[in-house]
Amino acid sequence: MHIGGAPASESYLVIDKILDAIRQTGAEAVHPGYGFLSENKAFAEALEKEGVAFIGPPPGAIETMGDKITSKKLAAEAGVSTVPGHMGLIEDADEAVKIAAEIGYPVMIKASAGGGGKGMRIAFNDDEAREGFQSSKNEAAASFGDDRIFIEKFVTQPRHIEIQVLGDKHGNIIYLGERECSIQRRNQKVIEEAPSPFLDPETRAAMGAQAVALSRAVDYCSAGTVEFIVDGDRNFYFLEMNTRLQVEHPVTELITGLDLVEQMIRVADGEALQIKQEDVELNGWAIESRIYAEDPYRGFLPSTGRLSRYRPPEEYARDDITVRNDTGVYEGGEISLFYDPMIAKLVTHGNDRNMAIDAMATALDNFRIDGIRHNIDFLTTIMHHDRFRSGALTTAFIDEEFPEGFSGAEISARRASQLAAISYFMQRKIDARASQTDQILNGHRYAVPDDFIVHLDAHAFEVSGTPNGARVNNTTIELESNWKPGDLFFYGYVDGEPISLCVDLLAEGMRLTGGGTAVDVAVRTRRAQEFMAHMPEKSDSTSDKALVCPMPGVLISVNVEEGQAVKAGEALAVVEAMKMENILRAEKDATVSAVLVAQGDKLAVDDIILEFE
Image (cartoon, rainbow, N blue to C red; front, side):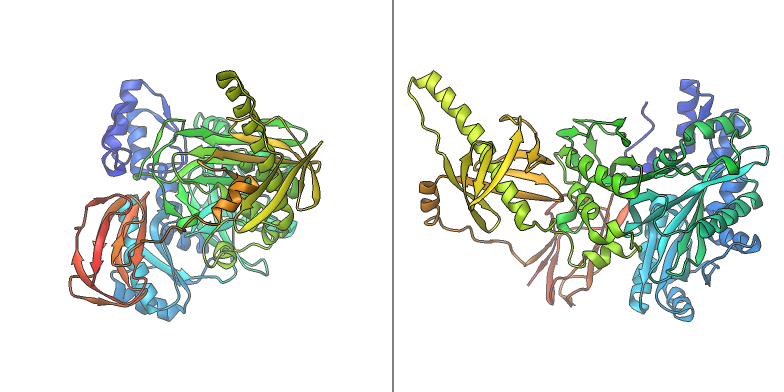
């Protein structure tokens, strides 16, 4: 059903259009999902007037807890520990700088009506406070229709841990354990897990009790989440309450055995909870990875376009492992610049944390998306990261472990040899098929070579065949697989270990993707390799005389004018894509010679915004 234009402000955020769709479909109840109107008091009230059940909390709870300033005051009154900060509204950037200095840097600048990482910035000095205030204000207005901003102290070395609460209309409220959501980028969650590897039973119980106390203070019913920031000594401080179902709810479902959506529907229908606090058990471990339409190899810039191929891993529950994939996309569908970049939520569950992590790494290797860029390699790299596997997490994990950005997982010498063997095996299969075809068409026999030079990155391997695999630089590697030319995935065993790879055949060689990186491999005969030594290298013709748009989006502002001298690192323009503002900065000192676009223009990748002398 068509409800308006692509921008959310013309469709999903227009209550009257949603009400019209309800009338046309005859819906008796509405589950609002994760965003848009899910925490909008006016929407809940409009449904009530229409005689339609809102599958969520009462309007009063939405209003009180949806406003971060009001909710923090109420939390303090309810005896919930809160972060120090300025709870009054802030009018302009000058006032923001003054308040930030009084609180003491670093500070967190946040949208009062915010959520999902939108309208949030960390500032370490006056300049960042001034810039962050304006960006937060703009994002808040665009995402929530409310540009109110407040500032609080940013807790260093923090963990983001949240408590899932569930209440009914009869005064029963319980908590369902916690979720660790510390792996974040730009304050947006990337990986979540339940339970937290950091909490002890005493801290869990204390956090749960405070979450329930806060929920009682607003007569809460339905599912909701109370978010805390936790320091290294397990001191915890209230951040906000999300009066809706969270994106990461599947990890709680898998460790508790409860269907939260079902519970929300039952509560909305007036049923009392059938489970008491003492009945809640946390079994095993669950991990969720958010599959985003973004390019981690290019600074996580948003990626839009058509899903020419979308092949998620098999969903199953067997051998003590569960794999679940929640998504709303399909092969052939389009990823638009107007909405959140999340494509899917991949979730795994095992008896313990290591089992869940290993299952996630395998599932990610079996996830194939073509047509747009995505973050699967990055997620896989985190699954193999020693610090992540040890549970030593903070919200600064990504910034600290990938300070120069992401360029793919580092390939060990053993892994490189295995990839060389696999490449050889695949090339033999390709050549054998070509030989058979040539015999049929031309009636003569083509001799398939038995040894090759395999180039993988800057490394060259001498590879020849063995009865059960290949010999790589004098090391024998056993290999077993049923791969055939044309298969999108390579499934097999290398030296007895299972391995999965996405396969793309190139003009020469192939691209193998798995384990957190994509590798281009060239497989050549010795004679061909000799000729390659005489091939000229391509020169880089990239110009540094212009600022080009790195992603499709809408130009929010140009911060410079013709003739202006700019310094390296200075903000030049702001482009909004997928509900997030992206600040484009000067890479070096320069003078602007021309401004070629205007505020509000829609830009494509590589459109020129500015030219330099």
